[in-house]
Picture 1 (cartoon, helix red, strand yellow):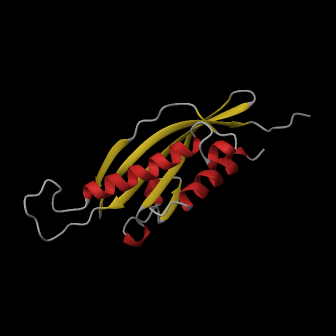
Picture 2: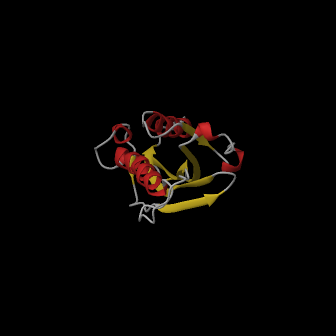
Picture 3: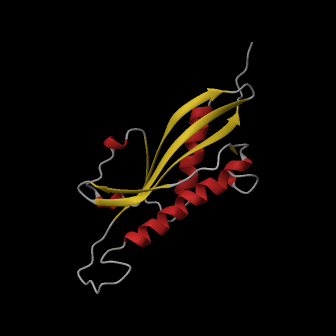
Length: 152
């Protein structure tokens, strides 16, 4: 049985192929060195739950796609502000949407691996002030994967 490894590798592989992702991490976000601006944009995920559904295993995956907000020096009272917040939100939503569409129906590489999206996930905007100002999207999605355990 290798479902955990397979799911981790499939999600990482998809994110690796996205030009808007520079670094991928898994596990506790507090372990990510967010002081290193070279890692951004970052996609961070973890497995929240796994339930055995007979011929499938249902995983709940939590994903955050974040980038650093760059402050410009010039501000002309523009709707777009003095930073790149809207650009970051647009780009990181594209990363989230690409992953979800990859597993939805028969439209993507994760769906080709017989991964099935169970829910219609909603992305939540994230804006965090750590050492860096970070923004992006967080999403929780549920997938079913084949349960290949052999019972002797």
